[in-house]
Length: 284
Image (cartoon, rainbow, N blue to C red):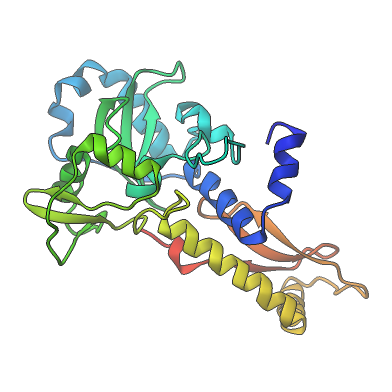
């Protein structure tokens, strides 16, 4: 947050909204750790891939080695929260392609190339879908590639019911910006995003919203049952051979973990920890 005004506005939000806005921001980042890189069927033979092959190979190497990809991400990733005019939901602090379908877009080089690499990142694996210019935000081709290349990974899942009509892509963009979840028709089947579980009216993914809710529940639990948190922290201190302080100071911390975000209760003096990890983080 770059300004005092933005920080003050963020401080007025209730704790649940602060949580999901923070988690929404973190979900836009790609946690730097090695991943197995899987490219879509026929990816290497595509003309636009052949034309940009050196840059693509270099970027895929960074992903495989677990290097920091911040320079390849949208400039909007620098804004975890921003102010917007009354009545406007969408802003640079939301990536709606990611929030609805779970698909990141990365510039091929740090010079902000026009061509983007579209990929889905799991904990240990990356699924590379396509190389395409800006504007492929609602392209059904991304879904088609995902389900045909990795039918068993549940990146998208078939919807068990039929719908009257699939909306056009320009209408999909309008609905997405309004926070209206839509289903997509590919190969005469209806598909639902398996990574994010869809989009909420707040413009964040259902997954992020559920994770934020689980974090807030942990916080309320700790408030209502402080003795149980203390007991767990004392156990951790004992396992580490650390003396428990006479006047413990316990806080909730965001910590670097094995995914885009992790939280922990921490005793400040001896650094005993109790990790909070939601089940929803464990995708692939």
